[in-house]
Image 1 (cartoon, helix red, strand yellow):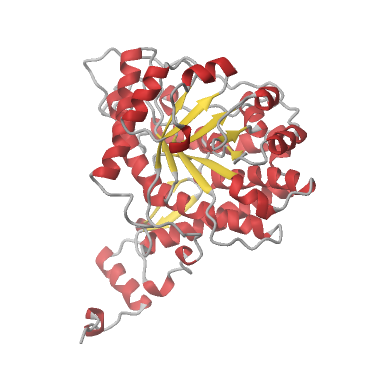
Image 2 (cartoon, helix red, strand yellow):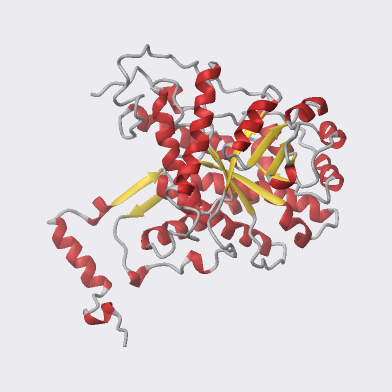
Length: 444
């Protein structure tokens, strides 16, 4: 007869447990066990079963048989067909292609067996998208909100997006580039909130045209950034499904067990030009966090150096990092390995609450596109970005090889000064933290 080991011990109440912690702290306040991984997130280092929130994993949309994900790499017209085929033969099973023109696409994708791999084609204009001939099983992406936000240009035409959707009604065609908010320096709470607001703009436009949420739902792909906060990333990729579910309820649609496709892409902020051999180390832990959180596809990015040999080496490392996480660490075998962690359940609950509140506040101000036009969104992201810059320069954040332990044998590369582009409104561009270091890093 089996027995529960924990039944052999007396239970400890939450109050008694906290009292014991206070004794162990020897007069120090409990606040010393509270930290802020991001300016708008507060976490405690102690948790008890008595005060754990309702488990987010209870209503996470989970019907997967494993935690497998696709290894994605992005290609442009300048990439050779030989390189693309070589990458596919060496582990890539998800390709993203930035569209330029039909001839370039045909040349790049020659002999690619699209029926056996996942692919997505990214368009920058409606005319290109409407004229293109792409594989029938490819995800097609035309995200006018992200394109305009990246350029700081007004005049977002939701009618263009609706026309694009109608043209590709038999393909997955609702791509939400939530990545741009995190990559511009936004906090995790901000990225989640603005991503949901971004998706809401498209849902509203399509449902106004008579399309049902049930029809739209399986066509949605959301791309999120992966930043340097390991545990926060895990929570982020766990709760995005919850936030989508809350949004769908606003359209009187009760989500079933259908998972929305979540793509992950490592952010720019901790990619360094100096001592750049540390970049893959940072990206390895970032990749782990996205995978443990449950992303469906992962892209590890590189800060291009202009040296083809070095850039190709980093592409190979980006691929091999993911292969090691699968073939040697077996991270694709366990569904939601973070489930049951009191800490992560608290963090997940906090992220859902704060992100949803910020989403509602954004909607009350007129929605995402109004917020972009008035720079409300950009100013909030800029506030978080400023906090990151302060933490870099006062030493609170360690950026290995940049503000701590720089490689003294290499000539220091001075990054180009960052310039905020303002056209019709502030552009959301990639944020490189290294660019804001006051002086060359030192160990003081």
